[in-house]
Length: 398
Ligand code: PMP
Ligand code: GLU
Image (tube, rainbow, N blue to C red):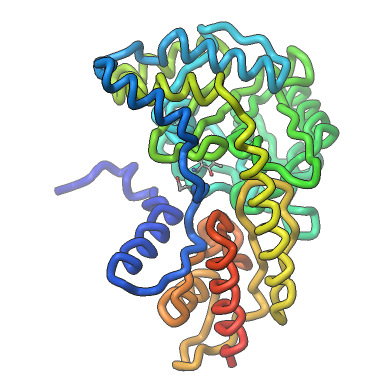
């Protein structure tokens, strides 16, 4: 069978692949420590689950409006007003089956052959492939550890060409945890407006920030940038609802209408009872988050401290999300006890997993081969155990 050409350009999501592999090893009784997971280890709060259960019992199990119910759109609008101080109308909002689906729909509705989409690296694994699936060209701009893994204004300005359609920003970032301050975002917004391009702002980790960091939306610096901003967010991370698949976009009404048409011809509405639960998540109590953030913070400090104590490893302290992105490049060129040379991040991840039963995601999947991504969305005991294994694995290289 001859498959469509577009399939040849893309890879399966490496983050989901590693998480799946670690889970399968665990199911076989192997004691794996999984630093791969891109999801909070907390359970979805009970008050949210209760609403979904009631919706099922009430027979709320039929088709609903394609872009989300008016009630859910209003909950999103209220959230954007509360958190960003921005006013949106229902015609500016579309709810999809997870933020990944939201980004996919943006790409299908907005990008086409000949368009360039700027993606700062390290990037979340799905951005380049989603851009490619829309026929457009990802333009990767490398950021480095020494600049805190943040894009500079000069880099951004230089990367923009007459073909540039959009810049994808993700703050706090998966995989680095780097987050842009309000001042930095304002400077980026000025370039976006001056060069008349758009920005897709993936805010999915906005609630998971540490050390008093204040999240600011790039859309909040005036009407010129707001009309060029596509806000993407979702419930997966802040409410630990990864499996429920609820994501949303706030953007100009033409784009939202086009995305709604695409969604009507692909997935239709977001799942009915998840839609109800999402209203509760957004409008209901938010106090549980404080405890989650405090726990993530404790683990973040611990894991960064331990990693930096491993000879040859360096790790920045992330400002947000629940990942660290340590640099292991000093291990490259060395050999494993069984004589295999570690040539890059994929070899190292394979060595960790096969010989020390620790799952991490190789940096190359995020556009930076020097690093590994470790998620600290797991218990302190497991983090300790996993870091000890990594420490040993690095020490055992010759
Ligand atoms: N954006 C980023 C940066 C992510 O890490 C993820 C990962 N889950 C998503 C979007 C998509 O999340 P979901 O589809 O679960 O809403
Ligand atoms: N975004 C998460 C991660 O980076 C979940 C997996 C995925 O959707 O790629 O691990």
